[in-house]
Length: 365
Ligand SMILES: [Fe+2]
Ligand SMILES: [Fe+2]
Image (cartoon, rainbow, N blue to C red; front, side, top):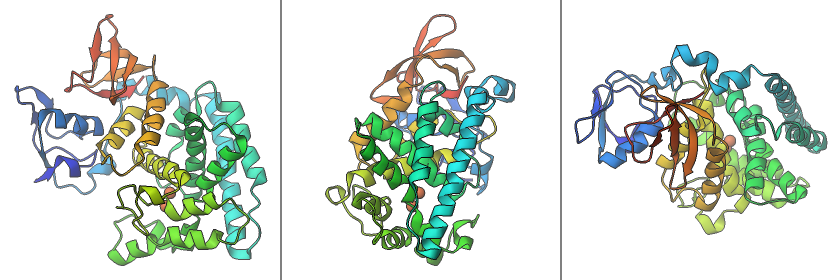
């Protein structure tokens, strides 16, 4: 057992002791995995440290979702088992395969980036699936463990395009540029040894150094290509952070392009959801909480607020299972606490998760 600062705890770590509120209420039992929503709520109680079990692999066993008896009725389950999702998945996999081909040809044979067809495929995904289940809900469920760089890049492209729309970008040409920022942001990884990219254990300092070269490698690869400059900058700047804590240059917000700032957020969002994919799927409020735990000065808050607020609002009316196993629907989003909405319970009463900080959303059902 070790005591760790709340800010350093990752969702999925296993509690060594139960968490008790100052009023004596049990917030979480020993032996259970802690969630991002719980960690966010702990700040309300002034709890600064927790006792965590020494298990490096705890995060892999982390089960943030409904208990087994709910598996057949979660929203994720319904999405994954729908006709629309299987069509979406087919189109999505085709995009990832095509991207792999384009990037390989470009890097190895110095051919042009022949991406018109790929962009058309992405357009048709948007036309077919922008209603109904919604692209973001499907994206959340398409995640798999050990996803490839190409799938990740298609994810970031699609999510960036959705985010661009939410930010008010209407011009299709501009949305295409943003989509391509996502498609090529990690192109530099094609020059990083595969053994480093797929290493299951944590990287050594030297390996991390090689990995951290990918933004610069990507920018150099794209520098002579006939592409909008912002696409090249997104490859270079997507790991830069507003507060100067990013890499490769430690740029601060005034020196980072707007589209790079969007990709920085969608890239992290995709990595967070990939970290949390389990058979019963993931609830977006957990990812929102995870973002809200991050330092506010890292990301462009204007973009982040619009992005997370739209995700949260798309769940108004959706069924939820709370941590005390009561059920309800999302009635209203709290703009200042996006992961803690107002819930209408089955008996018609309301519970505000912003006030009831011992409760959180366990699953979308
Ligand atoms: Fe990257
Ligand atoms: Fe990435």
